[in-house]
Structure formats: structure tokens, C-alpha cells
Amino acid sequence: MEAGRVLISEEEIAHRLKEMGDEISRDYRGERLLVVGVLRGAFMVMADLARHISIPVEFDFMAVSSYGSSTKTSGVVRILKDLDEEIAGRHVLLVEDIVDSGLTLDYMLRTLRLRNPSSIELATLLLKEGVQRVPVEARYVGFRIGPEFVVGYGLDYDQLYRNLPYVGVLDEHSLGVC
Ligand code: IMP
Image (cartoon, rainbow, N blue to C red; front, side, top):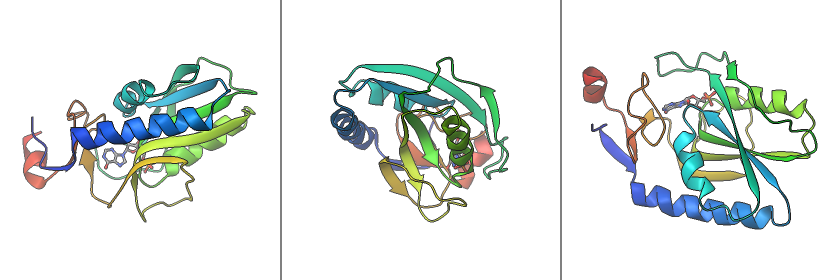
């Protein structure tokens, strides 16, 4: 299944995730880290990033819903699955596939901070530049991209294309066939 133009190749993603994993391992050396993946989009980033983290690490997942089948944010965030772990007193790293408006993340960070973690930081594969509706502080950013709608590597359009090994820009032709 093709999805228009390749924006970030499989090789570029693999290379960057290795760099991010090394950086995270350095920054949290001597600590035990809880890495929280935001489903569904972050499942692929999580799996590949995890393999490059070399400190003691635990994993948990949250599932949120911020989009229906459209390509624009609704601004409404629903928690579909909460964490299994308690996070009070722990170092938490949230892993996202993409930050767009920042509304999903802002909501999640505000919710999780109320549980008193020792620290909470964000790692995101993609950050759309200049489109945030709330300020977002992401400590680890894979790639800064433009405002176009992208799919692949966990990202979907109407639940399709998540399995693409690269990040692609969805064109009108692709929209027509899915
Ligand atoms: P935000 O709340 O606008 O920052 O959007 C966060 C969520 O919207 C992401 O975790 C994605 O699931 C989805 N999203 C935002 N932009 C895109 C895109 O370009 N392609 C696919 N999903 C996107």
C-alpha cells in the first residue's frame, strides 16, 4: 500500500531513534524509567525506540482518542485506557507519534502531573512546527515537519496506513483509494 510521497524514510527513522535512545539512556543513567506509550499511534515508535534504551526501563500504555476519521483535531480528548502503573515518585517519559495542535498532549500532561511523578518528559517522533495551539515542551523530538497530514509508522488516516515502515504525505489520490 503506497501513501503518496515518502517524507521520512525507514532508514532515517531507524537512525534517529537510535540517537534518541542513546540520549535518553544518557540522561536517565542511574535511574529507573517508566516509558509510557500513547496508543494507538505510538506503538511502532515505542517498540523501536525501546530497543535503543539501555537503562532499566518499564513500559506502560495509555490510549486516548482525539480524532475521528477526519484530519483535523476536535480538541476533545478522551482517555480510553488509563495507565496500569502508579506514577507517583517515578520518572516518566511519555512517547508520542506526533504533536500537532498539542491539545492531546497538554491534556495528558496535566492529568498525569496531578499524580505527582518525580519527573515527566515527552519524546515524540514528529513535531509539526508552528501549529501548536498550546505551548508544548518536548525534550526529545525525532523530526520537525511542516503542517501537512502524514501517515505511516504508526500514524493513520481513518485507521489505515499505520503499517507503512516510513512516514509519508497523504495525497488526494491516496485519500480517494482508502
Ligand atoms: P494533537 O492533539 O493535535 O497534537 O494531535 C495528537 C494526535 O492526533 C496524534 O497523536 C495523532 O494520533 C493525531 N494526528 C495529528 N496529526 C496527525 C497527522 O498528520 N497524521 C496522523 N495523525 C495525526
